[in-house]
Amino acid sequence: MTLAYAATLDRAEPEGAALPDRVLLKGNEAIAEAAIQAGCDAYFGYPITPQAELLEWMARRMPEEGRAFVQAESEIGAISMALGAAATGARVMVSTSSPGFSLMAEGMSYIAASELPVVLVNVMRGGPGLGSIAPAQADYLQAVKGHGHGDYRVPVLAPSSIAEAIAMVADAFEIAEHYRTPVIILADGIIGQAMEPVRPIYRNPPRLDDGWALSGADGRPPRVVRSLHLRPEDLEQHNLALAAKFRAISAAEVRWAGEALDDAELVIVAYGTAARVGRTALARARDAGLRVGLFRPISLWPFPSDALAEITRTVRAILVVELSAGQMVEDVRLAVEGRAPVLFHGRTGGMVPTPDEVVDALRSAWALTPDPDGGGR
Amino acid sequence: MTAMTAPTAEARPPRIVAARPDLLADRATHYCPGCGHGVIHRLVAEVLGELGLGPKTIAVAAVGCAVFAYDYLQVDFVEAQHGRAPAVATGVRRVRPDAFVLTYQGDGDLAAIGTAEIVHAAARGERITVVFVNNGIYGMTGGQMAPTSLLGQKTTSTPLGRDARTAGYPIPITEMLAIVPGTAYAARGSLASPAAIGKTKAMLRRAFEIQVAGGSFGIVEVLSNCPVGWGMTPVESIEHLSVVAETYPLGVIVDRARAAGKA
Image 1 (tube, chains in turn green, orange):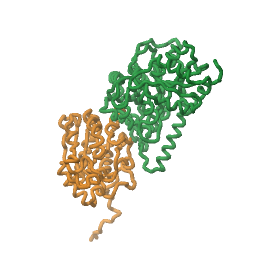
Image 2 (image 1 turned 180 degrees about the horizontal axis):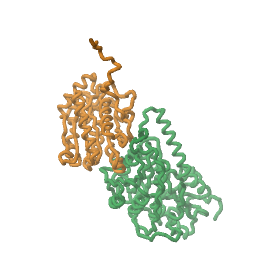
Image 3 (image 1 turned 90 degrees about the vertical axis):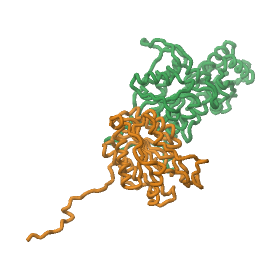
Image 4 (image 1 turned 180 degrees about the vertical axis):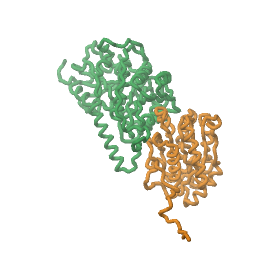
């Protein structure tokens, strides 16, 4: 299931003769159309900035395709509709932004417990509370460490470009259906709102056997999709089975991309829009003579801990860049386990760090940290 | 002379006056002695069976004592979060146009935590049928006040009786839903007597037939009992249903399908 991301990471033109024309696409609309092209049967949503164009695109396109679209009464309603549709084996997407993601937390717990495939897109904005409508990465901990209650995990994928977001939608459906789990696409307001020229390459993953799904007990015993296991002995067995699934996902679905890591002494770790900023900062820092690399987690859960640990074995320092006051940095520190200093630069509340800010942070890191070889390179 | 002999038992064909419906599982109940859920399960199973709907039914189980409806009703089931059954049913309906979609919800579930979901399912005119069991109490959690509890009713969270000044009034949610144009059918029955049970069954049948005919949202509220939660014997609790009906009048509240001549 592990898929190549090199083309989308580098935004290089894919090889091949029959490429689609290059078009200017807005992130929210590109994600929506990618879902339609991926065979999404049903979409449920509720208006919230900065993801409203995704819902609006679906409102127009899903009926054209004869598929289901409902503007729900709330995000709670939307995720509940997703639960019902997914229980019948349908390919289902919901989308929201941060405050709505909180409301979907309840449903995510039940969907994970009931082992249903649903793709949830969270186009993050500034928080906490009503916060702002500007881009942020403030929901990392919520998405990665647990939205709803209970003993479960959910794969989280973070696109760093619109082309990657398009590819990621099909991947997300595939992971969701292969493991029968919800999957979160964790985008931010810039990915959702920005327009980029892309050659959209859509993919409709093959349907898997849904011998578990509800269709009416016609000539077979009734099926029950449930999350209640009142006997602790039963729930423990259920949770252990879930845990085994999470281990399988951890082993097979780790995704990350690297850039200029071979000789890097300082490594920027950033995802999504922060990685785009980091890429520009990397180029400027290299021009200034700093040997900087970029490590970009694509799957935030499972976090690419082993790869990051291996890469950071020989570096002077790690600089984590986020559109938050510091969230993913906790997972980076867990992965690095003290082998290198882990520094942080972030902007929060809807502010975005500039490349020059990141370069300054890299210079400080260079000055503050000893050469790992002890020499004066 | 021909001797007249009494007919023997062997000669008389058996006449079954009552049997377990095919769609009701043959198993011991988890419900408390005297609880009305068993009767309502039976009515649902009978009507589904009589209309031949079992093989195409996808039902939604709601949180409360009757979450285990799937242990008895032999149809496909999905279990909803507390209060969300109408939204879950909406999801089922929109991708399974040929299914018969049913929710089975209690009054805490439907009339408190689930008010947004039930109101908007009705407002959208979702082609689903809601079986709404109103026993005026949170049974599963130990007998706390429900939004439907009667004024003065003693519960574990209104130990001195429900006082409107602090705990508000019983909510006539089925009448509220009946106002919405998307509601094709709304009715309230009771388990107070065999005759009332018969009328309730007719309401369920009518509601199910409307959905099969393509009609929009339908709800049948059933005034049921909770002997344990009410602190009564089963017989006392059944007798008490006539008191409950003073707050919640019985009958068909709206039948827009009939008014429109569609079904």
